[in-house]
Length: 140
Ligand SMILES: NC(=O)c1ccc[n+]([C@@H]2O[C@H](COP(=O)([O-])OP(=O)(O)OC[C@H]3O[C@@H](n4cnc5c(N)ncnc54)[C@H](OP(=O)(O)O)[C@@H]3O)[C@@H](O)[C@H]2O)c1
Image (cartoon, rainbow, N blue to C red; front, side):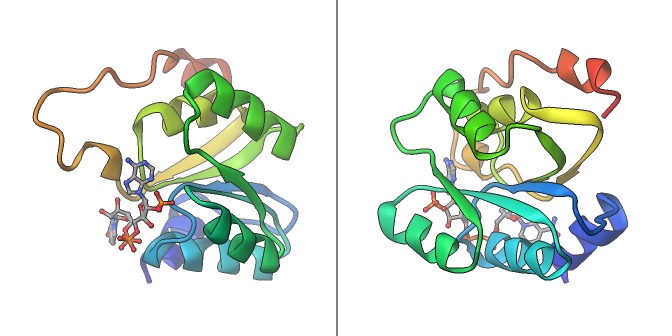
């Protein structure tokens, strides 16, 4: 229900959209990638291990491994995975992943902010994405 609602009611998923999902192998993310694939979208999922990425690829999802990548390296990896950017970012994580996603938005993109798991155990405020201006530039 969480994945469906975020994709369809908040992000207005349509066939052919380019969709990015963070925490793509988790409970919510794994449903989000499969629902977006079933709707006929080009789907990119972010996960942290070879095994998780291989599982995502077996679903027809283009996988990006975020381990040992800072925001700049992630930005490049996402751009390679979807050179025309993303219409939808299904956000489960925040932090550097959000920064990389913001750098790869298409005009009028939508972001369904489902969760920000990167911060749940943090004891101090985080740095946050340095490029929130992309929301303005991309009319997201
Ligand atoms: N809005 C709502 O109604 C609602 C409902 C349910 C859940 N949520 C939110 O949805 C998100 C996912 O929940 P879930 O139930 O799917 O959790 P889950 O099954 O525990 O999966 C969470 C995934 O997050 C990834 N992760 C954890 N820490 C990370 C970090 N620092 N950077 C990047 N990835 C990280 C892990 O994947 P890797 O191994 O690939 O790192 C893990 O597989 C959470 O933010 C949760 O709060 C929201």
